[in-house]
Image (tube, rainbow, N blue to C red; front, side):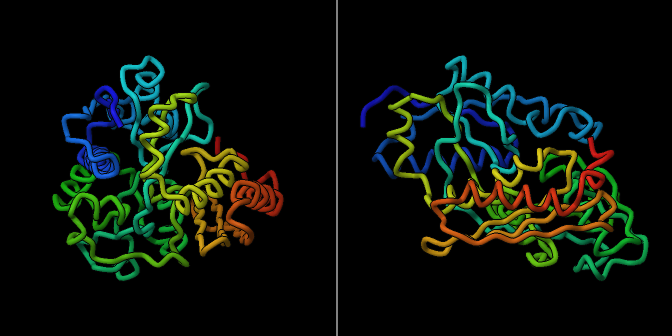
Length: 309
């Protein structure tokens, strides 16, 4: 189809650019368009600039999307490419998540310097992670380990690791694979002990509601099963008011027309854990996620969430 140059907004990290390039490549293949039909627009976000404290203290995961969404609303860009796990459950008025690319491996990867496996680290070893979910899961598995805040992009975190600041760190396997850096992984953590963040491993595309040209462009590259899984996971997160302040895990798997979901909430120290499961029709993904979130919230009780915000 013919249209003006499509402007793709993204953060400037190597991983964000890899995701934008993947989106562009899929659009080129789907529509037989040259690279010149697209422009990748790098936008600096508050989340990238704030490196001295946890995002939970600075304003939450919306810090990675705010400036990009402003550019979308101002029509400086036509679509925005994000890591789905960075997306708040509530979007600005006028914007929607219009497509999800086929999901990568959702597992967390451990990169160990003192030991190849997380469980084999020496007593009281120091592990770096900025994710409250990963911090809580590490403490659940190894209460003796000291977990320290570890901000920065993939390359920054690996440099800090190899400089000896920590004995190990965790990153998303999907991101490392997209960067061609899977060789640094020393252990892939099993889902049953280390469930992923809602949205982990999936690239999402945000656009303006009612932009029919863009909708037509995106339609061939959207992956239905990934969209269904993410609909369930994001509904689960929304039912828990999930943000960067809450250690929450959730993963929906699609098998034909059926969906199976497993969710978990943890106390920050990893010692209190509640789990929930749901199964049903993939077409009812969002209601299944909402119901799972409401059930686990009731199971945990109001006191479980005190002091998290």
